[in-house]
Image (cartoon, rainbow over all chains, first blue to last red; front, side, top):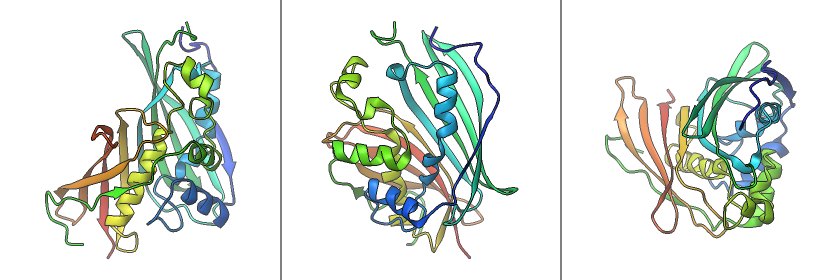
Length: 131
Length: 133
């Protein structure tokens, strides 16, 4: 089985921040940003700790894991100084042709205000080592 | 910029992806999946070498959006991508796009794509931008 169907599916909540200028700049340097000053459009990818924890709970073999889709809805900008509260939950799993497709949804808030919603989708395929 | 239907964005070419960049990106993004960092692991997974984070290419596209739609004039509301093909160290990624729709409220639907040095699409996506008033 490519995932553990008995895994704990309780949403994962964690806090990140306060976001520093250095953290924003470190991301911009890593992606060789030429036109993104401050918060880059995909900075929210730094908030995927809950996704990795979910993949661990599901006992996913990273060797067979591929990121297939990513969606962001931006409600308000993430800014320096923000203390972000993130909730990640499993939104779907489905099997097709021996592969498993997993989607995880996250909501990033400051207090009660939503900043970003995201959906990350993955495919788990069997590899020689994973068999 | 003047925003017209079917208008092509100015493409943005990034320097060749390096293994050092993948390490740097792994630290910055906190995505330490060994498939991006460990040659032996990547080969066991069936790839000829480590593969770049798909989100790195999406970040390049995000920078292309900021290049064409300066954040002081436009607000990015939605941004989605499908990763079509893996990228490797040494790949040179060009980010491009086209205005696919102009809504009555002035918001723009932008089709996006990334291609490698062989012209293969590695990523396809869409963004919704609204002009700031």
